[in-house]
Length: 149
Image (tube, rainbow, N blue to C red; front, side, top):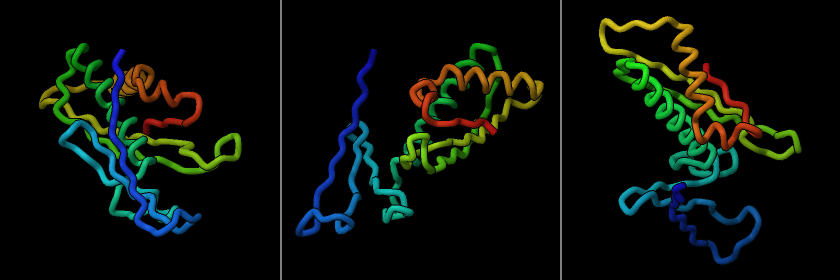
């Protein structure tokens, strides 16, 4: 199987590394041409203009779910014209009492080519199949509740 990597770089800008007195801002490089500025979530003192790991996790889950859904829809001959989602990562305490992403809600909206219709139950069934086959879902299955709303 594949090994997929990123490059992460953080540089201290303060004179000393002291609790609560340094920035978490860093960069993440995907491939050689795409990078992201990352920081802690705003609730933890991060810059709200940067992404944060919790958003990146929600993005990874939503992207994986969508790609799995599209693969299944293509096999079924469904003419998907567009797919939109708003994923929300919820922070809270896990069963061990530690702060974590405890739930991610997906809100997929699928639109088909003009003239194609599918029963709501069939669409829900396909979303459920995409959920079961998504690599990221299977990586998080034991620790994060995932809802498709």
